[in-house]
Length: 399
Image: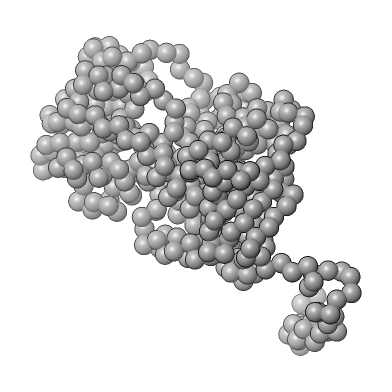
């Protein structure tokens, strides 16, 4: 077996990755470079370098990926109206490829021959990370400590940390696991494993409950250019500020909560609870703008790819050739998606109440129920008879 000389570890400074750092050095006897990606998770990053060095890292990279994450990944999903299994907006799924991509770039810069991650052997994240690694560097060695080491759970890690003088702060374990980024917060496991049990209100961090949201509706106007949001109420915003602003607005009105049992790629079903206020608003607004700017058949063709697009994101195939092709197609459909959408935010709902576009295909003169000189209603008779021909030839055999 080839000797490993340097590993780049995806590192958060928490219990798991702190133990991994020391374990990798002991088990593989090589240099370990740590890498922490900032995708808007809100974690405290100060003091992380000292902590990494104290645990044995030769170097720490802290990379601000927030703008790239929103601009290249979240906005792509918005343009595609990507939703997994009807409700999940895929905040975790979208963050993994941007994190893994930068990890490979650092590994190449450092001349490392291996990368390591902290995902367990039971979930989707191990697949998402590793598919990205192999797509971008086919010969990279991947180390997944949770699939290799002898530890069974948190208590084992705490004992190891204490025995090895690893500086981790012991805290009461939450009765669920949580993952946060600029797009969403997800909750799963523990008290949420019973699909009949309602999530306790105190777990939610981004949103008020609809019952406790403002009793007064708020109207906002979102402007889009080529399918991407660019302004709120006429004020131009960069991608990060745009999503942060919409998260605050949506959260205050109880928008964006989802509770579902989803099908993991690895084969099992898992219950997840999510808060995605900003993108929930954008989904409603974006679809409304498309309704007046996209040709019917273009929209239907794009929508027919929706399930495949969402599955590709959820499963981790962001850098697969078929996904690259779908992205190009999605971008082509968005050229005309320019304009403004007025949305009413009220107690868990993002209600579209107006849409306008310089590229609108909607024509009041044609659509009116009043008398017009554009549309001859008698033409509909021939249209209907032609479409009914195969049904009439069937002679009632379908009854």
